[in-house]
Structures are given as C-alpha cells and as structure tokens.
Image (cartoon, rainbow, N blue to C red; front, side, top):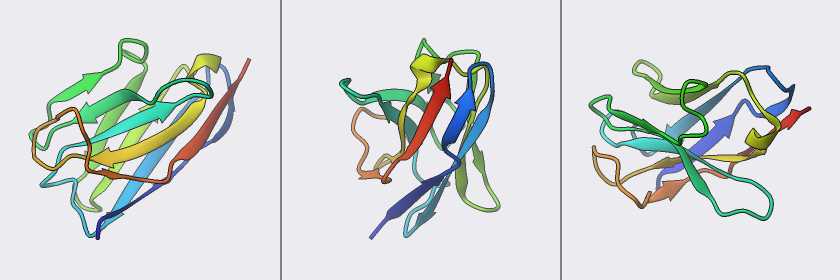
Length: 120
C-alpha cells in the first residue's frame, strides 16, 4: 500500500515563501512521476506542478515562475518551493503519484493534503 504524507503548509503573508514536502512509504518518486495539486474552497482540484522521472516538468500558468517542483533523490522526497505567494494560492495542497514514469491525467495515489493560507 502506497502512502503519501505532505508537510510544510501553514500561514504566510502575501509575497512570502513556503516549501512543501511529500514523503512516501511503499512508493517511489524515482520510478513514478509525481505532482502537486491544490483545491481551494468552492473550486475543483487543479494541477499545480508535475514532474516525470526523467525530470520533465509542467506547471499551471498561474504559478509559472513562482513555484518549482523538485525531487530529492537521496531521501525520496518530493518538494514544492513556493515563492511570491498570493492570496489566491490559498488552498489545500495534495501530493500525488502516477502509475508510470510519465505525467498523465490521473494520479493513482494521493496524500491527505496540507493547508496553505496566504494572507493579504
């Protein structure tokens, strides 16, 4: 059974930074593509950033140039560095993995989420 656990969420002022981390048990960010999604109140869950095992990345237009997804090989941890945060970035952020090395449309495993709140 694959488990994903997010950490690093919290309250930050607009313009600030946060780094989210995701650890896994029973899974691997080395052999599987992974992503960060978010869901704001009253909105659908959306893809924020994704990374294939080969290092290819994709970002939502709203976060390009501000967020960066990365993988720590040694610790098998997925990170999301978030800079220049805006109030509209407020959401629950979820870590997810795909069933292959490539990014696809449907993750097969999800974490429980971590709350990010950006105050104006």
